[in-house]
Amino acid sequence: MALVIAVIAVVFPESVPDWVKHPLTAAGVVVIAGGLVIDHFRALRRNARAAQELAEWGVSALESGRNADALYGLEESTKIYRRLARINAARFEPGLAMSLMNLGAAYRRAGRDADALSVSEESVEIRRRLAADNPGFFEHLAMSAANLGVSYLDVGRDADALSISEESVTIYRKLAAGNPYFQTDLAWSLTNLGALYGTSARGSDALHTLEEAVDIWRRLAAEDPAPFEPDLATSLTNLGVVYRSVDRDADAMNVSEECVKIQRRLSATNGELFEPDLASSLANLALCYTKVDRDTDALRTLEESTEIYQRQYDSGHRSSSFLRDMEKAQRYLATVERNIKATKLWEEFDTAPRGREKGRDLT
Image (tube, rainbow, N blue to C red; front, side, top):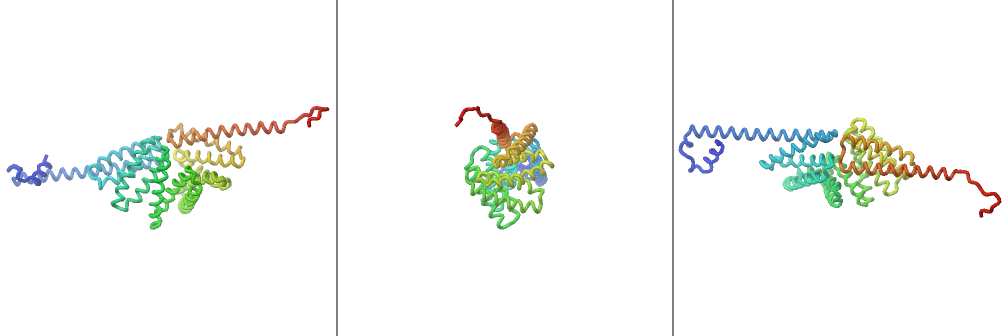
């Protein structure tokens, strides 16, 4: 009430009663109103701090494979940032866009593709608007664009995924040309774009893009393995798939074996986070083995892959890509088992003793 009186006194002084104009009353109103304003801004700061802490906690949970915690932290953070952005858009929209982007990643991990797409598109929309007014936001736009590309791919919108991912690479390439700090982001966006080119039957573009990504990740991982080896492994997986598609079987097997070696080491430190990628890489390596007629190695590798998939499924992994890859590995294992069985039957038949009827000319 004091705040309302103070505002009226300033905007419509002629409508204020005489008792309000009394020096003591006016002073009291100003003191009370000032206290309310201070309380208001303190509440804003507390809420902003809570939103940031929840977002950081959610991202940490996501990176360590604690999906339920990640969802809770990022959903709560997003709710708070939405309220704050309605009060002060210029100050709080950057935080809202960040929280939305990370929430999209958490939704994808939980298999909630439609929700992931919705919040990812909103994040890009906000950051595109911010970047139009301030070029400093272009790096954030590029990150949201790359994540939106993954969401488009999950729902089968391949053309949209390709377009937004190319935009992300274009931004990061410009940023990296002026600042080596952005080499990491460039490599990450190249990895995603290369995978998209591969699924779009653009083998040559996929090959060049992924080889560039692998070169950057190798250099970064050589200097500091811990943060960069997971990304190197992902790029190696995608490069192996492309090598296989253009019949460079030896190269495909080499990079796939290197990838599995890295992911075994990573899974030993955090199975919940890295085992799904190990299972996928093992399945890709099995494909390489079958192309060079190493069916026994393929069978052994696929058995390990499907065991890991089942273990991770039982622990709660439900993302669309995880379920899709799990089903592929199981179907491929059944195919390899049938092929090996058929080969053994043929070998038994081919080496069985053959008789010849005496006294007959079989020609």
